[in-house]
Length: 261
Image (cartoon, rainbow, N blue to C red; front, side, top):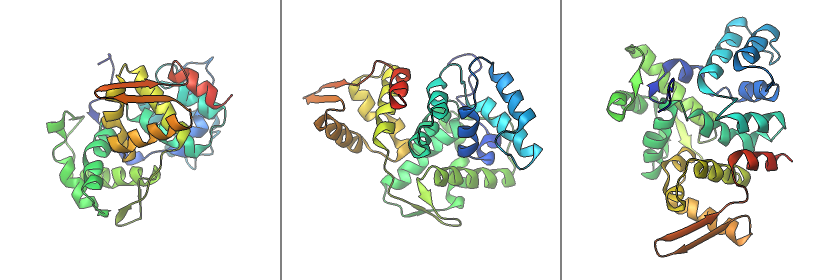
């Protein structure tokens, strides 16, 4: 784990503040790669070019973005896509993948608890059930920065479900229901490149737990790979235990540039 990583920190602050999809897209669309992250966020606070409704919310947006993203490094392709106007519906799943690189709680909740409920055939999920899940965070490798009060736990549980709603995995206000989620084709291809950049073998890409972020089982991933192979968007072949996967570009950055060229 790299120095300064927050990959195992269970942050109540960022979860309660929410997904911030529109705010993140607007900030990244205006991002200046000639300036540092600090300079870009200082400009956001000074100019409020996203039209934040209050100084407090503007400060919170800057603080959450500072914690979640590395625009000059790992998250640069996400910023490039926003700057070039990739449609938000295609960009949103990529935002979810990027923000879960260093956001343990959102990643673990979606991959572990929400996917398990979905896979077991649940129709609705409730805040009380998520509160029980939060009681075992430390057993799964998560570290809270301080002890949570009962009220904080309730707010975090509600926040996690709201994030799932914002990314289109659930719907509803009080009781949340699963919806039929479909990952857009170009978003799927982007994620394939991102996983290959992490040096995963083709078989490990198919079996990756990260597809659970989008409520996808390995069989769903393979079905999409076979479909894209049929339409010559990539090459995917299986012979016994041998799996071959050839993608259109050599890296996520290159594919991101192709998406908006």
